[in-house]
Image (cartoon, rainbow, N blue to C red; front, side, top):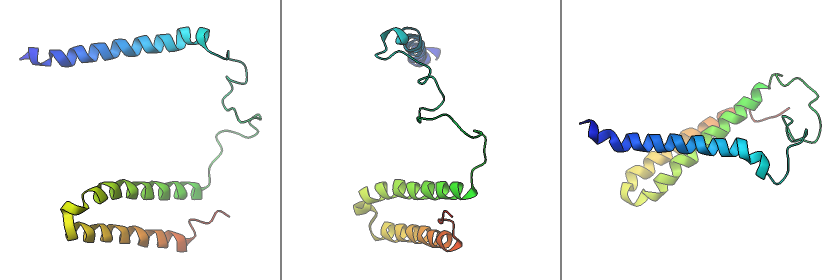
Length: 122
């Protein structure tokens, strides 16, 4: 019974060993083989060209999160549209109606947020 799990154990051991080897090579020997050595600017938190001038723990506006949520919603919509488009020939009219209802709900939500002013960045 336990012999059936031997390939999984071997896989886990090889994966762990490979991870340790790659991490060791990347951090230990990586600095010797780097094309450009590390300098103070490279080790700074952000390479934006100027020093940070405000507290990094400042609060973001709520509208930023609303726009982020909108992006996630419409990104998921696209994730649902691809498999639907591939299987449209097999699911037929029922699939077309279901996707129409799904898209209609998303459009109603988008119009609601637009009317509430969630997309305005004033």
